[in-house]
Length: 274
Image 1 (tube, helix red, strand yellow):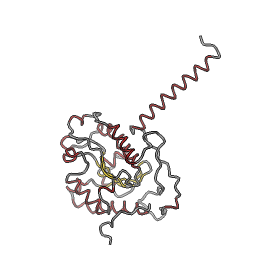
Image 2: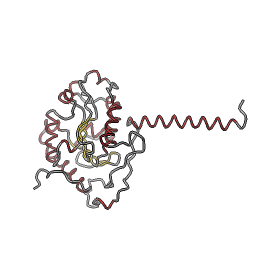
Image 3: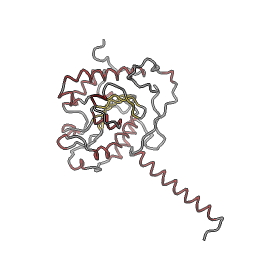
Image 4: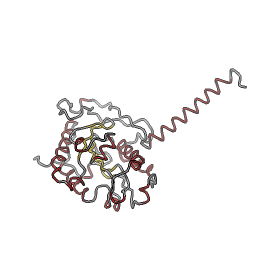
């Protein structure tokens, strides 16, 4: 039997062990993207960038300062280093059934310091073969859309929810999204973009936790972890229904306008501007 003097010591020791276990577990889950990553306003002076007072009603009034990284080691690394940490953790992923049918993992491509990120649904046959997102016909259209905004592919970052191709280009299944989503969250945490463009219903519904049809989601800014997010049509859908290209272009022009309010202009003049 422990004495009265020994009991508090044992209790404190047990408490220290418990706290250590909790910290270890939370750290692992954070690095895997299984926990939401808090985004805090930067200490940078707000006066350094234009205010959002003139924003349209559909736009979100968010801080013009870029979010700071979280405190968790590993997750706090931004840019290329942060993406490398996420890629290393993804490894030769076999977390779902898609591992048995894929040719290549398709992680992401583009500028690791991009302020604009495009998130799609899943790789197709061309992407699976080349290991790069959006390189098929839909990818060629996305490249044209990006260039029309005044950017090049290397200026932005492009990735998908799923990192492996679903057989026959079928829709992603819930268990596949569940296994892959933490790595998408890790990518976005490392990139810390100012605006995200969600391409199609799966990307938009996954990031927003909203099952509203994309036809109703598109056109209005939403918020993902404090970042402005514009849902719009997937380029593959635009190939099937070209009449929707005008609406998609309106969404992308709204993205350019939002970035401009944050003091961020594209490297080149957008289509239709001198």
